[in-house]
Length: 115
Image (cartoon, one colour):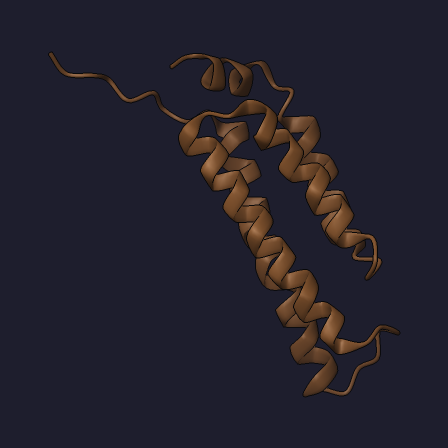
């Protein structure tokens, strides 16, 4: 007897892609600050710390999707907001809030509740 793998809903894929892109943005800004000489008003090393935080947060998102832990999935977005606050990373805050709102989609809830 074969088990049928449940297809991941589109809103879940959107969350995954947005947070995947978010991991690289602090490093892009770090490059712009250090190589191109632009100034964003924060210490460049904080951008690296933010990037590392986003990578950890994305890891939590991936783990929660694979293990179907719905609460952990939502807590990862709160963590992303907290990571974004010290550097005033408004893009990170917007992505985290959008992801949190999308996480209330009925298709995503159904995906996590079906074992």
